[in-house]
Image 1 (cartoon, rainbow, N blue to C red):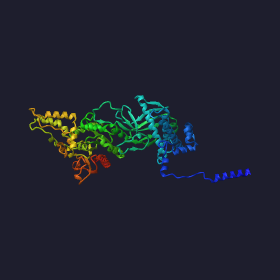
Image 2: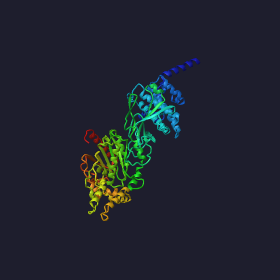
Image 3: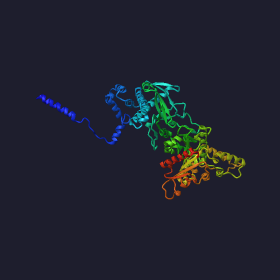
Image 4: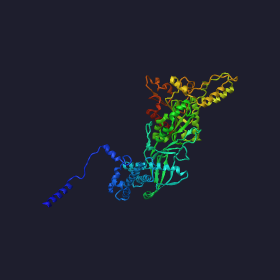
Length: 628
């Protein structure tokens, strides 16, 4: 009886094994599927599906790899059951997971040798997956796995390079190689151009960890390598020259492992950082393979603005207080490039380069414009009269051009574009205009002043009242610019602010000297010499503004206007942007005019930026066609 029961149970078990389903099925939502496919050790803090599958193939699990990491990686490295792509991509992720876990545990402590080694191991396995397996990277272009492995490499490079950077102060200036975490680290190969070329960066900031308020977009280029902001050492003393090379520059870093074969690279313990300027380089060669370089074109600009202190300094400059700007500066947004056209931006009253926060970023975010243009921003003290700033800005630009291009033959010195907002637009227009003798009537001279003194007065005032167009400029854009002044400069609030403004000391000294010169031979004082401040100067009743309103613009210069229209109550000619009337901003003869619903800060609107991009493309095509 018992034997029979046993036979029945065995038969039932066999029937169940044959009849019961061994595989079940369930459904996941589409977005859950996508998230699972993209999940990896960086974004989700767990191994990717592809790595888990590779472990399954060789009878390993995530738990067994966590508990016996060395045995796990050894099996993966040598098992014949995996292809090289499966093997190296899984090893890259496992080593990266180990490094990240160890890195997090250290919090603020310096990265230790085992953690650095793990990052370098991860970077190396990702490197051989990308460049030393049978298929070319281009053959895997549509595969998600390659994107993940590139992410492993770039993250590992970011952390390893940050650790390398901490060693630089200890190595001096003549080092060729050093030892870290059992690796031989060679001196970096770089084409980076910092303001102080004789020293390494003072800081190296990973761009991936930066977020910005106030910037509309962050412009990146996907590719090989990790993005950084390299910060130049602090300047030792204030410089008398007007130009300023950028203190914050974009950098793309990649680690190159010694060896020309798969076996060589897997065996090496030698690595070198390659640091590239992404404005100059859009690719690099690994072995015989050309690969696109990653880049972040916004981060350096954003960090510079965040640390600039422009907001408070521009107010001190307007009021003529201590700590304000005394003379104009020409600030280069990227390292000088003789082969890129130059765009010069001039801000308005009580402003600074912050007026161009999104303008410059959006222009350089456009790939075609970025390849062909470089941006210079003129930063000047806005308490000075327009004529004084005009002369000093012209002098600063001339000196800057001569410094970077003494012969004046570089592409950067030809077909320049001026872009000015508000008072900066008035100055930009005068930079491309001819004064002739039309402005001399604004100077009160006694009828009995001797010819000798008249000659000396003209010599002293000629830099401010007699000028010719900048020959390097062939296009200009004026945004919300009061070419004929504005009645708002006479309003109570404007007059109150005007009373707080102190003229620059240099201007006051010049006025005192001129007043002395204007005395007749008997020593009698002539008509009072009134020098307006910048707010007075922008009044539609100001003699200089009225005299300069219709000066002829060079026939070589194509010009465009962009005007704001704020709460219109009638036809366009009767409107204003809340500060500048349309009738003052409009210029006859412009190649184009665009009216945008906006307050006075029209330059920051998306519509104005799109128009500026269009104009720069027009200039680019004209230059290429030989007809600027």
